[in-house]
Image (cartoon, rainbow, N blue to C red; front, side, top):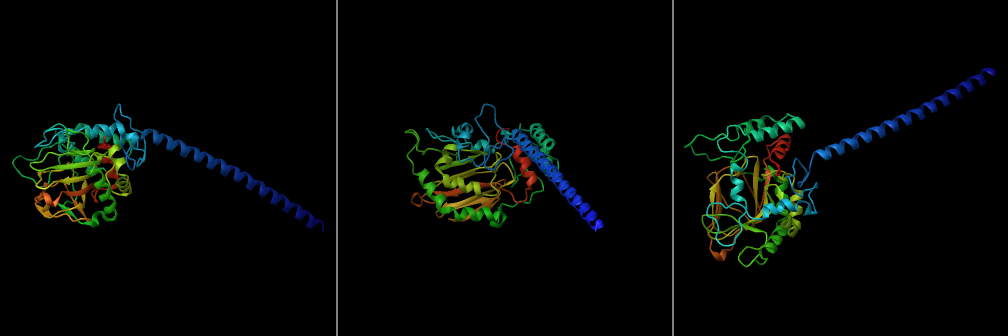
Amino acid sequence: MCVMEWSLERMREWVAGGMQSVRECECGAVGTALCLALLFIWYCYRMGCEQSATSLHGGYTHEPRGSALQTGGLAPDLSSRSAASKLCQVGGVAGGGGRAGGEELNGFAYCQSADRFSQPGEGLNRRLYHSLQEYAKRYTWAGMGRVHKGVRGQGRSPPRGRPSIQKAEVFFLPDLPSAPFFSREAQKHDVELLERSVAALLAEFECVYRSPPARNSSPLPPGWKANGTPRGRWWTFYLVNQGTPMALNARRCPRAWRVLGQLRTFIANNVFGNACFSVLGPGATIAEHYGPTNVRLRCHLGLKVPSNCELVVGGEPQCWSEGSCLLFDDSFLHTAFHDGSSEDGPRVVFMVDLWHPNVAAAERQALDYIFSPGR
């Protein structure tokens, strides 16, 4: 009997000791969890201070001095980017065959010029290379092989006298599969999303296109810009111009802006990204030219497509189709024309720039950093 009492007493002591140990472990676990949470909050704060995510999806963008840019995502409140937008909405540099009168010109010709990024004949663009080194030191060199090769080759002039069907004017990423036109499967999700949105996009186009002129001396409605053409008229209404949202225009097209935010591969964070309504009048021709880079695919969603309209890329002709997307690499020599009559009306497309499907995620991040609008 005494042995049984002694055994039960010892058992009670063991149980009590075990429960005390459990309590001590729980306190230690809670303390550890709190410390980890505080460290995570501190890390997020530091990263938020270092990066200025002023683009549609957040990314490696930098605020230009004196701007009023603030951090934000897709930015339902577009006022945070009004200062930068004003810079893009106050005309630009005329292309060949500029307009007389009071028509404002957008930055189309300016976008095509490599002078914006580098000095002509410069064998090694030090500024771009410095930006790449800065990115790699802050993040990583992993996956930067092609970007490094492209940056070091930036500014080297091709052999004179040899015509080239493809020539990126600003930045060429080596070893990237290329073709004048791409299948819709290359960016299937975004193509299908755009095509499902065609009715909403057409309705908003009609709204901004039918607005009265901005002023008496200009035939252009508010927000529209004229591009230089050899003949005819080519107007554009930008929602995003060279990576910078056009705040006033975006407010007038909330559904189109929402569609841009839902695209997975829209180039939202660097100067190679654009989104606009593009109108080509009857009898108009866009002069042959090269785009700035091969890292993007330009997507045209047909909204209004009369007969006798054609897009020629790398010598290959294609026709737009209402409600369908056409994907092409605009680093190939390309032109477009509308040979219809005035009764046919204008050709209208919604244009967006998407990432080339073979540009890796790490390369996209580096290019967003190097070519961010504020750099």
